[in-house]
Length: 630
Image (cartoon, rainbow, N blue to C red):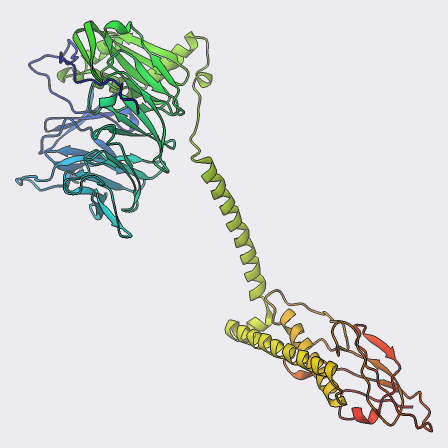
């Protein structure tokens, strides 16, 4: 960080730019203004809450029982509600109840009438989307309330998680939240600073810290401005420095120097193009692009000019209103790292409407002008009207939208082309990952729905129920595994030593049982849809893999024709498959007394012809064969 940055100790000549039409004897101080829905301006004066139209007339007013804090602007609460700090109490004003029996003003937070308020309210913000009010109480912490008044959670500046302390790294005993909480609607985040110069990012839904950034090396006092575009801006008045942060990580993206600032709580504004603008006592309006590109604007010679009030956004959000005061004299000199500005007697104020992104100036007017003359005849003349109040009325006035179009026409350009409409799309990499993940979930959901529709349509499932179906499937899988193990053992035994005919008969029976179970698992008890009229290939599976031949002794030599057929039934009994040998042809001479030999070969064809000397009498125990001997 550069240490040669200017800072304003304060204006040595204090002045309040008050219009000449305000009577000193009758004027009333107004609080910081709020531009509400419909362009109305809400302010508070003493114990009266007022709503002004843009032409300066009072739309309505409400008497409150407490003196309001003029240094805090009212906060919009949505659905016709406004929150106001008065005598360290938070009042909720529902102007929809004006003229009806329902109460218009109630104490939302703090003691009732006649009681002393011990807690000091530093600031508040309201999330209209979640109907939540966030209040920072001095030395107590941050409190989140529903708009109905129920406490959601509270949080201090220190939090212990997983055995580690978060926050207040340099001071534990006297460390508290010290700034006005700031809401980022796009990111659903709350930003607040503590007394040690640490900036916190919290979620509006919980009490966990997303990140903490330490700015104590610059200063312990700074202002926070949400960009609502993926950026967060920190203004350090003592250093005349603007720092841009990434809202996801808290890392510093860029920083830029400005001229000396007028107040310790001076805060910039961010327009819809993402440009951040702030006024300086050197007479310039400083505007930074989202990437940190700087532009400086001035309507008058800056030698004797100052900008002491921050700019305001107009109703479109793309243009800003700024005021530049021309003084009779101004002196600036530096002392070490600080710059002191001295100015006396304001001469004229110049109000300007411009678009920082393009540099186009659409409207400019010197005080006293047509607008000021109009306000001097309104109800606003009863109050002290400074630059901030005038800029607020200019920004809220729908009349200036027409002025913008007229100014654009005079310059021969189209307003739609002069203002660049840009929208924040968030972190691009994060969005890409999110869309990819969303697509994966969609494909998975489609597959799951299709599987469920197919699965629940199975006949066996409808007959037995889900529990019985899964139990039967599990049982079949266990049987299949046991039979496969037995087959492997018998084949190994037959290959290593001479075995009798019963071993081969047993091996064939086990193979057939295994085939039946496999067919059940692939059809009736499969997780897919049922298959109808499907026929498995018939085979004589005495050996899987390379064909082998075996021999044994007998008394006769015969030639056999064997046809192996399988039934296609879903019955659970062992008769689901039947093997029929329906033709046995004796091709040997009975009068020959040669020793018969048997060759049994494995093949995958349905009908197999082979010539083997076979002792038919030894197959008598197999009831599934029909012997036709000649």
